[in-house]
Length: 320
Image (cartoon, rainbow, N blue to C red; front, side, top):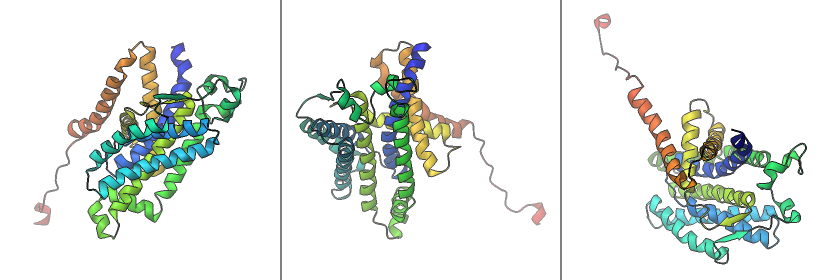
């Protein structure tokens, strides 16, 4: 129990970082109704761009911005394959993900892993988040409390949710939501649904790459396979948040927050299971089971636990 409590701050920090990626998945999966598999590639792209630029002496914020733009370009590629070339969205995502493996390797000078020199204090001080801040940031710690990843990424997430809430309240954001809700009606209203699909994929993968850049800082390195299975983690976070908080969080901003909370719950569960002695090689299986269970709960609830509503009788003695 003590080991789990000691690992809990790190689990929450990772959950918040992956929660930003999950919000990107939410945009395509729930709003656009598109299963976008670009995520596994664009997540690594964000980390690859960040680590190479930061190593080259670029400011951390500019490196983060470059990672965001690189992710957007990945989403643009998927969007154009889908809308211009007529390739189904899921296959377009697979093709982009496949191509991004080579792109990411090229960005990292064909190295499987590139590390940041976090052992040097001057480098560590420049990072926004780091695993080293988890145990050493606090009231009596080596670093001030505001450097703790939970606080930094928590504020970062709140700012992103506020920006997305504003954006989806604009005319352009409403058009994007209408495209996912009913594309035929959206086209009837004069909305260019191809354009809004591309825009949604661009925004989504930008968020994913931004999360990858944050995780690169947190871990102190970026690996070529860091994004493998990211789409499953994103879906798990979306589904967990929706199942547990969907009835309570009705506001759009709160729905985005529920995705982040879902990611925190996911990583907390994973940490607890690992502390109980589970072989880490079974993590993928555990993730698949978690997603399957939370997808099944709403279906079984509607099928077995919701009473069918009897249709109203027409006419009757009172109308005779």
